Length: 151
Image (cartoon, rainbow, N blue to C red; front, side):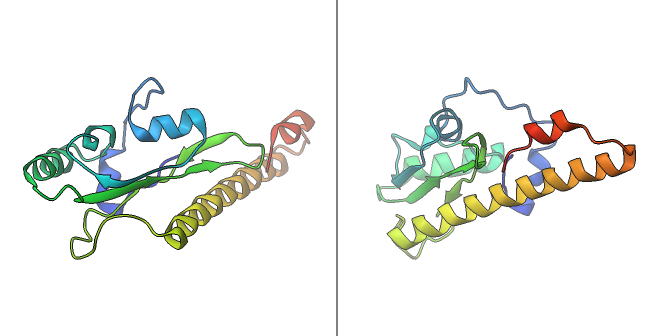
């Protein structure tokens, strides 16, 4: 599961994600712990995975040219089901907010953690509805399917 802006959705079609990649998003999926970079700098910009390759190229060049080390910030909380299984992550960056200092305040961090939690709940609800619809259509109850469903 991934969340992107509407303009970046075209970059997601047919994309294959592999867990061996070293970007922060994949590290969050492996560990389950949120990562927050309050300063996106020349040294750590390559750790951030941008879906739009052209945009990534422009951003990386801009950061490397920038004398201001506090160029942007990046936050990646995990999207986790109640069973503690990680189903994705939510990457939030402040690249467009050039008039403010980068970094996330505690209340912003809590807000995006809440958004990730709500995404997880929505995912689980949709999964349950799909399972229920399949059960109604087939006319039989598959107990094993219901037992695998976790909220």
